[in-house]
Image 1 (cartoon, rainbow, N blue to C red):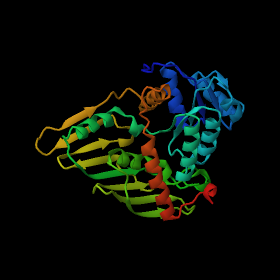
Image 2: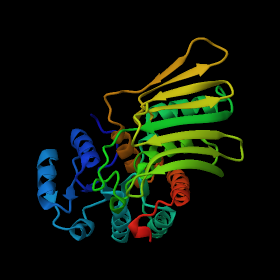
Image 3: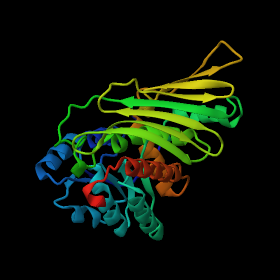
Length: 329
């Protein structure tokens, strides 16, 4: 895997879970392994560092943030710990790429945004949908008028999770629930295509015994009469399919959160247009490359404004459902 970046930056990693492992593998394969790593479980951090060629294991978060060699901090902890690490990173003048959902709510995100702006820092969410080449290509068919006006978006994301009140999917103390775990993907897909954020929001949610959302159906619309339907579930296994319908045709995305292909179907032709990207390239690499471009000052493709809009939707929906995490009380 070859890096396209023109600069070399030292990245620090906080967290050693599955997504952090995926990112560490990408960084190692491109020849720029993480400079350092920190985990609240020291032994886990040591194993992680040995596996992915990371030379420095930090004994505490403070050591990581105060290291002058660190340029960018990648945060991959449970959602409810994101804000504390974002703020500490910003206070120490580090650029930040944080896993989704970037914060618990809009108030936290606004606080983080203000501090990063004051210090001239890039703050971004690691959202694959904003960086995958397939989406960029489909966007060109929208911009040149081929597809016409957007009419309706239909997004489904369901994955069966065995109920366990102690795991991160169902525990309110770990910011569990479908919204922050998989809903962020679905709503980011919706927001990428909407010409403006949704202004009318209707929904129905089923809560688990722990009080977090385990299934939901969401209907969205905006002032341009664009509409979206979103289905989320930890109970039902749903095909990870998203369809964007326009006045001149429709576009199908399979495995939409990490799509490497899409099919454009136009009403005036029987020949679909297949859009594909290199399946051998990890979706996370595009995030890394775009983040480094933003930090370099050449071009910012991190789409933070869409992250803000999605967080507004998620915050309102959880409020409507009465899903409140301990940190929010």
